[in-house]
Length: 106
Length: 121
Image 1 (tube, chains in turn orange, blue):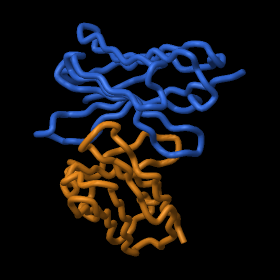
Image 2: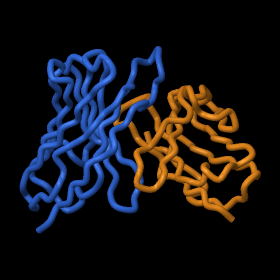
Image 3: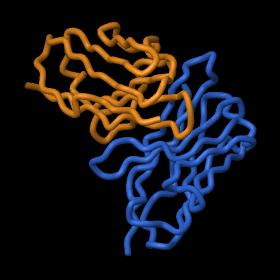
């Protein structure tokens, strides 16, 4: 299953709300996760099962979708949110990732 | 606290071999399936291999099938990746990552810090 993530990069300001989308090439039900990765660090899971917030993740992060179309929304951006975001499908093998979205400060 | 720590990275020759290890602590390793994920310099994440808790189910990405071998030793709380016939595009950071069951956090919820593999000619 291929995942198409958009946009590939995004500029926004602190306090803005942004949405990243992830489209699967086939129906993956809700088996989608979102990760945040900062430079030089391992990824961290934000959302799993398309919309379930991982413990400890701020509530300004939210996920939605099912089937083939998914989105990650970050409301009221904070300075620590500027990073790269990846979606990943867990419906089948290979466990593909999206190409990533780099979120930069405007 | 659940933790994973990779080791074994370094310089490998093209056509040569490298063996990575991942040491688990702070959780019952034998009950979790595990994965290896890599990231080429400046690129995105690429899943490369999966092993079930009892080692009875294994999957590989096409890019490493036939060259890499995943294994684990539950008695030693350790995961391994034997990398043979190295190619230049195997260069990158290699992460081990935990996958809980589908009834729990169904995502790669714990990651190691990564170990760098550089393949030279």
